[in-house]
Amino acid sequence: MPDKQTVERAKRDLKRGKAPSTAAGEFVREEIDHVRQGKHGARSPQQAIAIGLSEARRAGIPLKPPAAGKTSKGTKEKAKRDYEQGQTSPRLHKEGSTPRGRARMKAMKKEPKNSASHSALSRQARSAAKKRQASAGR
Image (tube, rainbow, N blue to C red):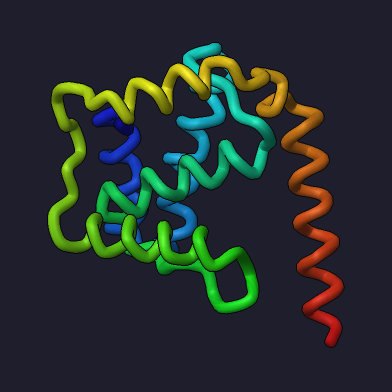
């Protein structure tokens, strides 16, 4: 669950007229911090980013699911469910835990922590930028 301050910063960004992706960046930043602090790990920088975007959608940030052809079918469906759940009834600070949630956190604690390192995020940003430039020129 996202921190109260993260949700407030994201809502403030939206009120200031910034793009939903900018507001969602607050959730991604929080997720990167969690991995760096060792709360849990992530298999790759992309996974940490995806978790942050999912939390943003579930918290009510109007971040649309990815366009056709950008990701796998399962990822698109999950993003769509998260978006709809966040737009209808965002549950920001749910109490309690389910066996599935505990199992997910147990598995994530075993993942590597260095996937949120400065160099790993730098590599991810560089490769994403290369893809954008290649498609922009077409």
